[in-house]
Length: 181
Image 1: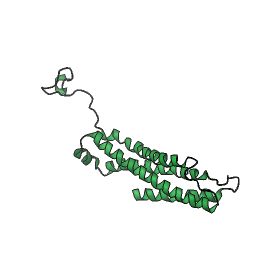
Image 2: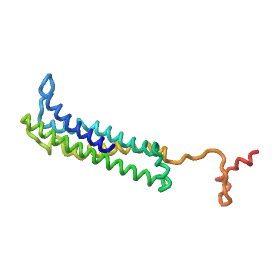
Image 3: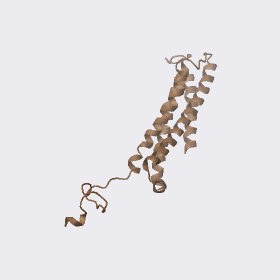
Image 4: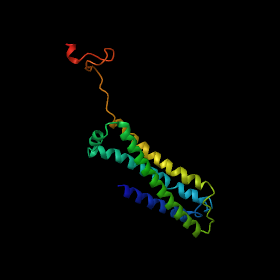
């Protein structure tokens, strides 16, 4: 599934700069300029973020579908440690997919600009800032999707009366259901 995600993102990261380059200067569209490289990076960023969001959601849902969440919780009973590992993994996937999108979009965008005889300025017009910010934002989108799993992994607290053992304090205990008769 991850390979399909990277393939779709790569395809759109390559296709969008070509499409933008083909329609620029026609029918009222602005012509390409040196700042168009930032547009080539921004265009596939939303799709990439949504693809990583989908991967994050599917990683959470797949554990419940295949019932591997029970095995994971038995192997690591500390919920925070389990969720932290999953969040780091999905963030790393998002960062790598975002970086791949940037590399493809920058390469294809540079080719499109060269074909239109436009100067390529990779260190101007905010391109370095986008090169750092976009993969980080895409990684955060993956984290936001996986964060929703916490409500399903965290054990629910039981409400109502509970039995307390002999070592419990009287203030924190309630009576057992049998004593209410």
